[in-house]
View 1 (cartoon, rainbow over the protein chains, first blue to last red):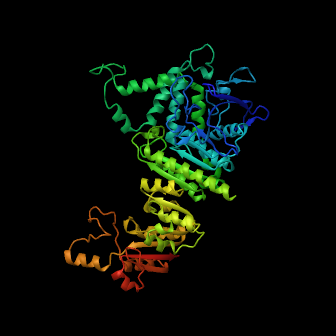
View 2: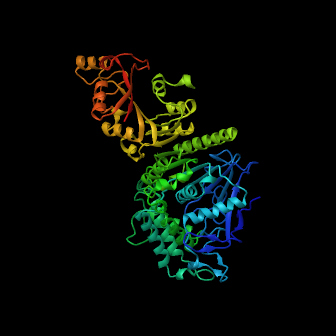
View 3: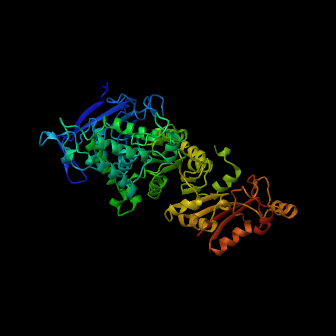
Length: 381
Length: 200
């Protein structure tokens, strides 16, 4: 049985993980959760890739905040990703701070937390750890890999790196590269962390106070990018927070200020500031086509057997439709069987986590058809 | 399943060789593609604007990209399909000539059907009323119709000729999919729709 803290396992103990940046890591601890049971021929595994500040608690309560899982709407018994049918695995990404090795972990060479000595990682490095975890769990081939936002980036790297291990793939509200604007917002967040005097060049672990102020500002900035202007206006407008008039001061007069401050202050309880630096850097470094002489289609040539589904949201300006559609067209040009749709939604980037009947209909149809195709191909082979 | 296929779509299906690669532009709920995939073993892909159509296709196990002929065909590589189908859509695009050329760049062959604006009822309606025809198959008024580039069968023949495109087959038919064995001039009077199998 899974404890409330999920599982942890040690990978790359004998053979080190070779990173894109040239460094290597050994060993690598991985925190993960599983739901449902692996069937006899190990053909029902679904791997869920989480977003930047997400975690492995996809359908169970968060061990620190106590809040319900971030995709409990989608994953569970009888749900879109039905844990009565599928063996669902989700792991904390490399570089994060909830059971998987990251900058807060102890560097075996020094006996102290890594801090900024931790090697810079990439999205593909995260995927390499996920593949090793699945080896450990006895899953050779995934029925499906699925994820939104940075999770979608991992899905795309699964397709470039381990296509032979996939039957189907769903990438939601994502991109195959970070644009100048994406990098710019991340840089503001990182500078906010580094400007906090408590950050201390990343060596704040132990007795020292954490760079909470800086991390909270980073989160506030990022949170704006997850919502549409329309959503902010509808939710807050110019409404005042528990007062009748403005204070002619710098209190959180407006509801939107109060909301963002709350988002920032609760975030620091569950996230490590250095992890935030490393994971945002990994996303900034993503540019899949650069490994293929600028031809994104070439990245997916080895995945022509994988059933793919790409979804964007009309009001998402962080990873807008054009970025997602570019991926779909590249896959199409590579002969990958791919479906794509832009779902109408007012919620901005965060729409992938929220109620969306059209998205559910598309994913539901895709999962059903993928299961049917797997049945057919097994019967005839 | 084959019985359920609409007669006009059956006419299209009959022109497509089994086992080929087919792109259906404006594939709607995927009825034609599904038939081609299951009954003719084609490797089929769709392009469809409406979310309901996309979801319907995906649930059938088809692969479809949400988009339209004007904006998305340019993204498809040369020679990526044996056939590209454009059924009753040419009159609704912004740049019909560019779309037609794109069809034959992407596919070795194109299957195009158009509603025939030269059909006698349409001509009579314009002649008699002096207003843009509204008929059963052209059932919207001029200001809210999505059909912005109407043409007749002879108009399309002119464009095809001007672009040096070969007509492999021409199948004029009624709106319920009954084939008419008449010349193109006669078809321009009597056919509700014209079906063209085109080649570069």
